[in-house]
Length: 261
Ligand SMILES: [Fe+2]
Image 1 (cartoon, rainbow, N blue to C red):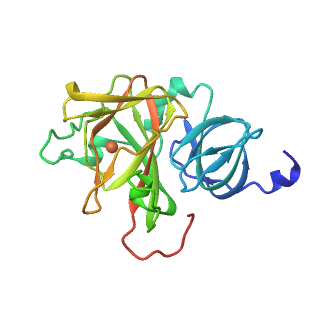
Image 2 (image 1 turned 90 degrees about the vertical axis):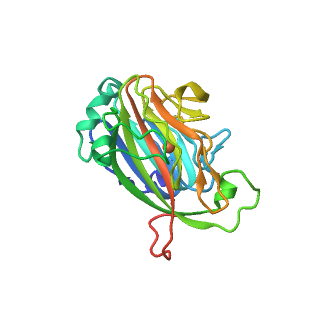
């Protein structure tokens, strides 16, 4: 990489999501980002980013890669996560970082699931602080591969946060979100699972997740009323795990100032 490119590197916005265990930064309107060392890069924008050279290849929206010393170009919105070499053995320490809470403490008496089994507040599942990346315009049915027509795009707000669960945790089978979500593995090995009912015995799909991997397609479809219809699903931690949630929330008020697109 030449100096001109180095000087043109975009500005990192620290998100403060993972304390001393996971460093998380956001980049917007990236022409070219030269990575120093190893990092997990998530494309949270709505156009392909480009990675590497000889040849450069696309990193599509809602996809990620674990990269070392690589160049990432032409991205609307990137999240870059870094961990220290010994972070895997200290993953559980993240729950002591600022803004982290047991989900059961955040939810109080539990999360009611449309008449299903409620969330057990004692579940060892911790949520970190959430940051807003900015806004993107997307056509839900197009993003969710229900149509080839990318119009009309609608404004969505992008929010990210980290989660932690210790080895062996079933984080809760649920099926309701009013946003589009995907997950990126950061530390440890886990899986996103789908079920026919809110019953572990009805599991029909496992997507195994290692650091740097993002579930390749959101699990939801669009409903006739514009809602998002999810199958029963959960995260399961095979080892102590830290993972990133990326959420796209529909914006209902008029769009104003943009931090990113
Ligand atoms: Fe979910």
